[in-house]
Amino acid sequence: MPDLENISRSSLSAALARATADLAAAGLPSPRVDAEWLAAHVLGIPRGRLLLVDSLRAGELSRFTALVAQRAQRIPLQHLLGTAAFRHLELQVGDGVFVPRPETELLAGWGIEHTAPGATVVDLCSGSGAIALAVADEAKPGRVVAVERSPAALSYLRRNAEPFAAVEVVAGDVTDPGLLPDLRGAVTVVLCNPPYVPTATTVPPEVALDPAEAVFGGGDGLEVIRPVVALAAALLAPGGVVGIEHDDVHGEAVPALLRADGRFTEVTAHDDLTGRPRYATARRT
Image 1: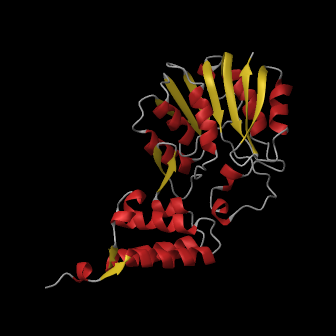
Image 2 (image 1 turned 60 degrees about the horizontal axis):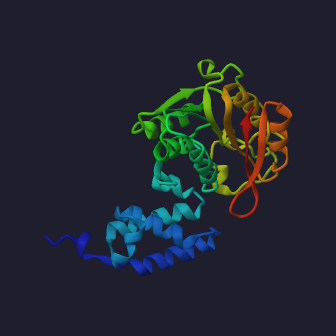
């Protein structure tokens, strides 16, 4: 009997054009890119190899169409793919864990540049493990401690961290001043992408599907950052460095918190690629 799945085929270029139009109509900022990622996912190939494919089988077209419809409803692309790209990594993500954003790659890159061979690195509010695992992947740390309190996020973090021998996952609350007592004064680099969006802020639909505890940082967005500054000062060895991501309204507030602590020098504000304030760094005295 003929294999109808293979006989019935549709043009990939036409399917991508329809999907792009549907996603554009839904108000997505990058409809063609999203359509290509979904098509590559259905086909089980890298996005860059789509140019080598000219058609979809009936089942593939059906799955692709269903995924496009979900994306048009603003389900995060990464949830549909089951993974999120971050620097050189593909991280498992899904319901219950914050999807890492491209702008956080800048903080991770800064941390990698400041991680010497054998260094001890702590990643606070680790989520999926994006920053911690990027450091483990691209630098040569002796130990990377990834701290997360959410049980759902911890399940993704542990799975993502499995291939990295240097990474230790710790269940903990970064607002606890007694966290990581064995590392006091012994850490080389502290990095943190905390919840920092002020509570009253209206966020895009995709961000609204992230866990609220990983997005919002209280009325002024600084409820987690304040204790993180104090914790970083306690953890860092003299000369160690800290980098903290923040909302674009915090370009002055977070550097001010680091200066006010009194245990940091070289406090520096950093912008993202769009010129918006994005993270602050400092060195422990």
